[in-house]
Image (cartoon, rainbow, N blue to C red; front, side):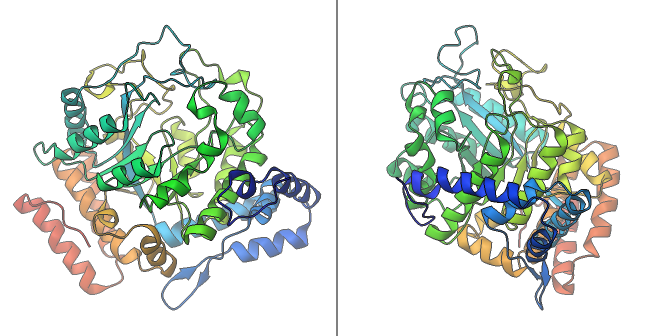
Length: 482
C-alpha cells in the first residue's frame, strides 16, 4: 500500500488516493466548523510587511475545508480574501496570450477530446513551417507577443524535432513591429532529454494538464495510447524540472471527475513541486469540459456550475497565492469577468482552437479542439479589460531577464516583482495601442496609462517608464523592460 509522501517522486505517493479520501472526509466533517474555518481564513489572508505583503498559503486539507464550506457569509469572505491576494501580488494586470495549434494528429484514445485516434470524420492537419510562419504573422498583426503552442501526441507526425522546428520558426518571424517574445509549450509528457531540448529552444512555461488525478477514472478516460500510463503522465513535471525547465504549469479538466477530488489532487501536486524542487507551479489553469466535434460534455458525471467554478478558483488562489492563474476562451465573457477578480491573472484573447485557424477570415470549426465561448477579437477583449479597470499586459520581461522559477517566486513573495510588472505592463500596452488598437481602444488605453503611471510608487521608476512610453509613441522604439 502506497503511503502519502509529498517529497516522493512516485505518483502514487505524492498524489495519494488514501490521503485524498481522508482529506475529503475531513472537509465534509468540518464544512460548517466556523471556528476552524475562521482560523484557515486568518492564515490565508495577506499580511502587510515593510516591503509589501506575504501570504502563508493553505495545505490541501485546509483548502478543501473552504471548498466544502456551505456557510454563505464565509464563502463571501473566501471571495474577498481571494480578491485581496490577487491585488496584492498581481495588481490589476492581466497577461494576454493566444494558443497556436500546430497539429491535431494524435495516437491517444482520450474520451473527452475530439482529436482521439478513433475519430475518423475530423479533418487531420499538421502545419508546415511556412504555415506556422503565416499563423505567427496573423497573430502578430493582432498584437500578440506570447503564445502557447499545442499539438496532439503522435511520435510519427509530431515528433519532438517537429515541435523544436516550429519553436525556432516562431521566434524567427519579425513582421513590422511584431515579435513573439515567449513561447509556452503544451505537449504530451515526454523524457528528460526532450525537456532539455525544449529548454534549449528557449521555451517559457511547460504546461501539462493532468485531466484527472483519480487514477481509476484516468485509466478509463485514456483507454489507449501512451497517455494511458498514469504514472508517467503524473510524474512529467519532475522530469521537466530535471531537464532544466523551472516554469511549469498545472491544470485539471474540471468536469471529468468529482471536483473536490480533483481540487485536492491539484493542490497536492503544487505542494509536491514545492517540497521537491523548492518552487511550486508557475501557473495553474482551470479549464472545464466543453462541447466539441464527437464530444458531448453531458456524458460526464462531474460537471460543475458557474458558482462552484468561481468557488474553486477562489480557493486555489488562497491555497497557492503566488502562482499565475489562467482561464481560456472556453469560458464566456460573464464567467471570465467574475473569475478575474477572484484570482485569474492570465487570459487568452481572439483565440482559435483549430489548426491553421488564424489565417482564415471566418473562424473554422472542422479542426477545433473545443467550442470557443468568448469569440471577441483581441481588440474587443483589451478594451473590455480596460473598461473594467484591468491593465492588459503583453509583458514577457521576467522570462527574458532570467526571472523564472525560484527567482520569480522569491521576487513575487517579497512584493518586489511589482516594481517590474506594473511599468512593464504599461509599456507593452503602449506598444499594442500604437501598433494594433482601434481608435476607441487607443483613447481608453492612453487615459488608463496616464492614471496608472501615477500609481507607480518609486518616482525614479515612474519617470523612466514615462520616458520609455514617450519613446514608444514618438520614435517607434520598442521592447523596453525593467
